[in-house]
Image (cartoon, rainbow, N blue to C red; front, side):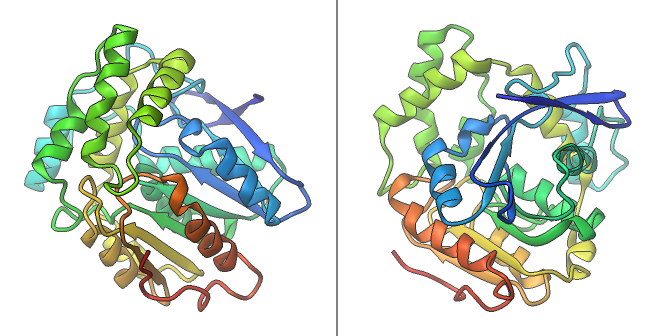
Length: 308
């Protein structure tokens, strides 16, 4: 996979690992993955299917994850950041915020010579995609926010079981890490959960880049970036919000609130979908994304709710 250096403010540059699918002459679709998730969270087969439908698909590792730049040894008191954010107090300094991660995304587009792209993000990636749309609207042909939320603490609450599974320290031993993948089922699509696939994913991700240290800085970035309510109200671009009705990590109110805030947005609520992208739902999700990103279709392409 290629790597590009993206100019940023802190540190002076970030190297982003990325790959592409399809014809560069097709409309660009930038995929942004979530908290601690590598670019492989966008399955290669899913990316190929999107490319076959006429999109130039780009996926990449966020900073502090995968094979992109890691801020080795940069300390953040994530507990203090979370407590301050939840209390509405001044947040302690953090190494970076979602705005910096959004700048990484536009920097990658710069390096690829892409003036404007359809931007889709999942979970934390949805927060980053929203921030790209807020801070760099001229770069966004349309926005797709998947299983994400607005930064408001009143919506999208995790269930206690899901947040405990997310924040549990991952085992450093490879075999133990693979065994621990069973806890991901806590937020997975219940109808479609595949425990063998979870173990295979854990092995793949561990071997590619096991880096739990980056999670504390990414989590601090989420909490330090605050509430996007007013900024989302000001967006003026075709927007599709996708959320699973069975999501326990970011519950559906997060997606519903996102769609309610962004003028003219479309909300796709999917039965039997949790906080993941299971292959049985790909046909529905791909159709929705392709329809949404078709020329002149973004504001009216997708119904308000879908059942599967």
